[in-house]
Amino acid sequence: MAEVTVVKHPLVQHKLTVMRRKETSTSKFRTLLHEIAMFLAYEATRDLPVTTREIETPMGPMDAPTIDGKKVCFISILRAGNGLVDGMLTAVPSARVGHIGLYRDHDTLEAVEYYFKVPTDLGNRDVIVADPMLATGNSAIAALEKIKALKPRSLKFVCLLAAPEGIAALSEANPDLPIYTAAIDDHLNEQGYIVPGLGDAGDRIYGTK
Ligand code: URA
Image 1 (tube, protein in one colour):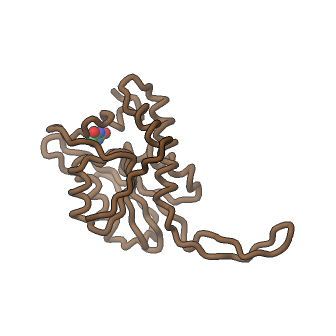
Image 2 (cartoon, rainbow, N blue to C red):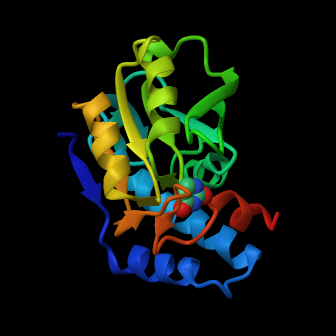
Image 3 (tube, rainbow, N blue to C red):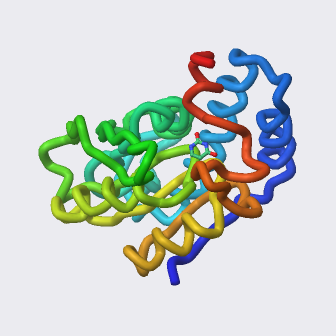
């Protein structure tokens, strides 16, 4: 079973509650996602390898901690992943960013890929894949399969909300994958939506419905 971290910080939980409310505006929803994403990135990067480097402060030299290795890479599962990655970049502005386009076939709920662009040297990087809603897990599983083939130094998954079904499917396909989320909801409905959830994350971020 994958290791799942639920970020229960009161600020995250309060912001998530406001996001869930159906009367919350697009602009507020987007801002809150950005803020929560920052905290999720903070948790997901907690164990990044650190080394020391000699620097000069105005008072003299010191061996100062610095993140070891190449820049972290965030990979957004389009399109809602972009909302999450935007906020994660506030926590790690120098991160590299990849994009994977997958749409959910409405009949089968299976993921179909239409776009894939990630940094060429992914093999040396710590990669964090982002998608706000871990519902059936099909998109995440398909995305991770492609990314794993490029052998990143480490791999994690960040979402805003997860369904128990999505966590089970994702961990079965990726038993060593650390998952970070702000909440695990009750269940998925027949249309593959998380209940109680917050509706369609993409529509709520971009105001398309
Ligand atoms: N995708 C969404 O945007 N919302 C859900 O509830 C499930 C998948």
